Image (tube, rainbow over all chains, first blue to last red; front, side):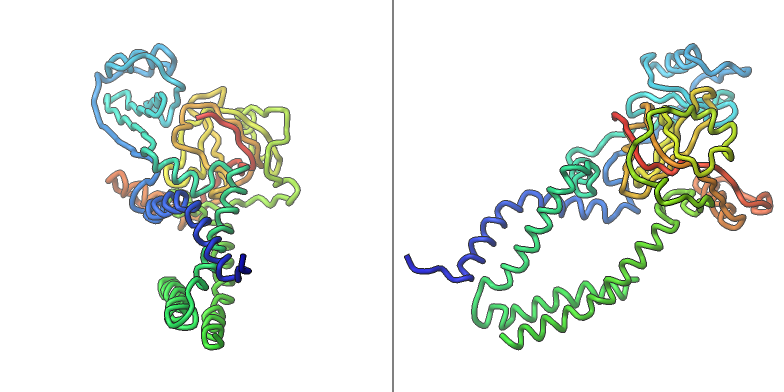
Amino acid sequence: MAARNWRYWFHVLHRDIGYACVGLTLIYAVSGIAVNHVADWNPSYVIEKVRARIEPVGGAPAVDDALARRLLASMELSPDYNTLFVPGPGQVRIIRQNHTIDVELASGSVLHEIVTPRFLLADANAMHLNHAKRAWTWFADAFAVALIVLAITGMFLIKGKHGITGRGAWLTALGFIVPLALYWWAT
Amino acid sequence: MKTAITLLALCLLPLAPACNQASETAAADKAGADCSACPDALAKPATDVAADVLKKGMFLSELTPISKILAAPASFEGQRVRVVGDAVAVCETRGCWINLKSEADAAKFLRVKVEDGEIVFPMTVKGHPVEVEGVVQKVVISVEDYRAILKARADQKGESFDPATVTEPKVSWQLKGLGAKFDA
């Protein structure tokens, strides 16, 4: 068997690591777009806010389990909840799983917030932003190293005028210059 | 080949200042405006804490009641404590703060602030007990900044706000979270 040169091994590395990285690359790319626009939307949760009105509660009732059950019943909701809080005078916050219900007792005004994790995207963002820590940190580091290997081996796959000695050099140069110039211009 | 290597070297040159700039930006972020979208992003901790007190993780075994801290926060300033309480509010944007309800008074809470990204509180943690270890800090918001915050809140609610009503810096207390445990 003839000896393989370095370019052959670069091909092999680029091909096989490339296949292995497709999954997480796509996950990170989609999540990247999502979290890039965090100023415009919540990339991980759908937050729905619904206003309603119930019968006002007069006087200054004690904020306790009985009041919570009474308020939930008036909203035709089941009596289960996680905790009660008083955000301000005459206000009650009832917190259920992914539901926060703020009630203004005197007016009967209700603000019902429902939080739903975005399907798949919430997990993709948690992966991308390394919420898991621990083992995921090492795995994500290994993925980053794999991307470095892909970038370096990718530059030397082809010989000739389409390779790194020809147009490849110009495109690689643009790959550095364009983002850096844009970054300096934008900041 | 020589041309290509020269070109690549030329392209890599500008990376040096870019790296400096990036770390300066990161330092500025760490200094204060950790969560630019949060209403109280301008709050600046006024408590200096020794580096060894700021070790990340959970090491204390004894819990300090939140009510005890809220009753006399100055006596806990700079101290490392471990607390537990129900989360009654969470940072929607980055999960970088939570409010933990006092076990003794349903109208009082302790704000827990963490470094962006180091600990992330999911929105689903609201209503669940959260255990946090951290350092009690005094937080001061200048008159100008506090006016800006209140104006932003009023604008959000469609209400009017008179800046003349704020005449003194806003002083509050928070726990700088260094470790947290929760199920959500």
